[in-house]
Amino acid sequence: MPELRQVPLLVIVDPATSHRDQIVRALINFYRVNYYADTDSALRGIRTRTPDLIIIDDLAPPQGGYELVRQIRRDQNPDIADMPIIITSKLEESALQHAVRKCDANAYLVKPYRYSALMHAVTTQLSLHVEAQWDLLPPKERAALRGTLDVFQSLSEIMETGTRIDYAGMRTACEPLVDVIAASDFRALLNGVKSHDNYTYAHSLKVATMLCLFGSAIGLNHNEQLLLACGGLLHDTGKMLIPHAVLNKPGRLDAGEWEVMRSHVPVTLDFLQASLTIPKAAIIIAGQHHEKLDGSGYPKGLKGKEINELARMAAIVDIFSALTDRRVYKPGMPVSEALAMMTGPMAAHLDQHLLRLFKELVLDTTGGEIL
Image (cartoon, rainbow, N blue to C red; front, side):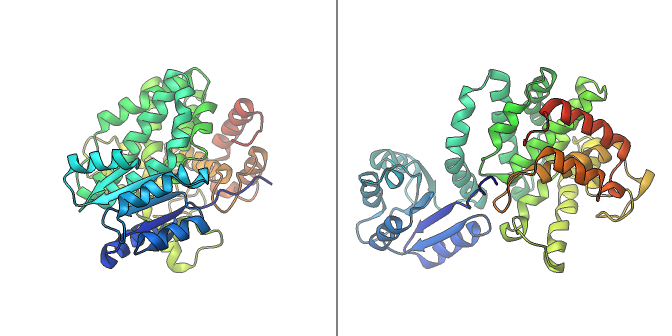
């Protein structure tokens, strides 16, 4: 059985209890977190249990955050010496930039900073080793991954500030993805995000890719495929607000957790409908991709012909992607097993005519291998 991906361990070093607690609360929904009030305790803890990333306040006693960074960089253990480090400080940005370069930290945050800035910095540093491999890809594949990632990462700040999505920018970001699909070379995209730190992005990119591929297979034109790609990238936007403990729970969700999980659909709809440029088709994909033909889906319990055909396609792709995704708590399911489940126990939920077309497409393009 493939190994499960370990949840990254973060270390926070900050003497200010209130600020440290705020950072921990922000990160604990996504990562394992250890925290320390001083640099001596932090260094002992780091050497006992090597983290994946450290966030250090520049005023952490007794010797200060910059000196802790230097000590880490001199450590004889390369896993410790090379780990990503983010410095936080109230210094002016120009002074902080100089100090960070001098001590060889990787990034910085000027206090006070937004929650979205913190998450962006952490995810960016954790995923740099994955994204570095994108430079080895052909230009179109590289552009598709970097463009969709930039757009996706901007969504959390857009949601937080109440501004509107730049749909024109999203279309531009998704253009290379559609071009890659046309060239039948989409596997590099899926391989490129398997280990990315932002699971919701990785899943959304996979849905966008497979939905665009599905549209191409049934004869949709370039603009229609582009709309499917954008709809796939946006379909789970509300999951950015779901706590990590619920989103990544390995067992069954209890009633309260299930309500939290289901809430991502109306949250996504409210977000998309507030932007007047988002096409109706993308909103339908987001609003109906969890509906089931037998009426047992959500949020409205639609059944049969009440469910739009685009949403039926999106439901198939979303379920297939979720089953074959590699998660923290499970390996990806082989393609053949996922399709057998969708045509067997889930048969009443999905449009079987579309599923037959999708099954033929997937087996033809993947050879039944794990995606």
